[in-house]
Amino acid sequence: MTTAKSRPTSVRDVATASWERRRAAAWSDYLRVLNELERAAYEHGEQNAWEQLQRRLRRNDELLDAAAATTATI
Image 1 (tube, one colour):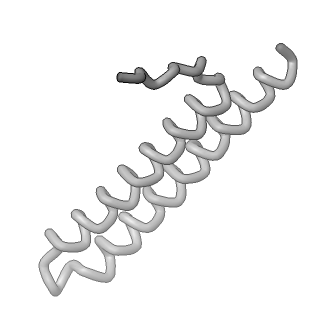
Image 2 (spheres, rainbow, N blue to C red):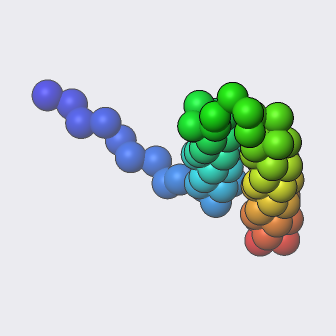
């Protein structure tokens, strides 16, 4: 029986995986909010949800860029 060799996970891999999880969570929350909105409040609620999604995605990209900058200096 052979065991899989474990390879060290790079900071970049960890940062990318975290970025993907946060991105998926942001989209999931956005879609959940849309599903919960009542028809009359949909447009207003959708706009708020969209703005929050955009903020979260921008922040997520900033975190990935910061992690990449950190690994570039190591």
